[in-house]
Length: 303
View (tube, rainbow, N blue to C red):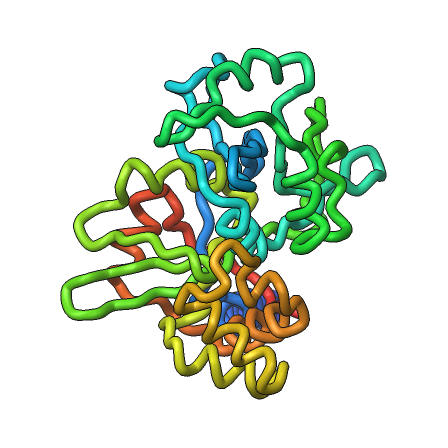
């Protein structure tokens, strides 16, 4: 009887040791893999529904529509931004990939209004000066060639009927800036003030982006001098001078330095992702929570 009890005790101790080992392993894995700078939230594939439009005086704009919009008219347009600003935003988005029926598709959907609807849309494309615009697909094709050269926007826009696997999670890289009471979020050089609240005119960006599939990855505090030094270190005086001139408006309408200098942008993102900085509490409160992106996910360091 005593021998039987002893065997049971040994088995119980071994079982408890195995459980403890599993718990410790799980805790260690969380510490190793939990990205303090990475957040996610929502339910659907991230996307933009857009119309590229050409206006007089060579003004090129991207019109972004509300999530779930059914009518393409003036009231449904959430925001119109210059092509160079839109390119700057896309430059700080990694569109990711999904695996569907053993085929790879871009995870981020950049959907362009269909050809049959263009006549209806063109009849209501009017800017704030009352000038009429026309749809020009070459505008967005040029932007894609600069920031996402391997992106197939026709394939991305396809509706996938059924289950798909996420091969690579899409990501949005952003920084923060606090000057006195003023609080700002930056995606590339595109600034969004969130001091009091996220303005309606800025919410258009996140209507269809804050989903469970995409990660919002924090790069740290914005610092202009740090950026200029980075451009000089990895692109030389020419690249740094371009950034300075662009920043003060001398190159108005030109693509941002991060769009023009692809290798520097990739190096910049990789460098500051690896620092794995935790965003300030106000970033979570005034930005991430406001757009429904408040779930920290476990993730490996960026490659």
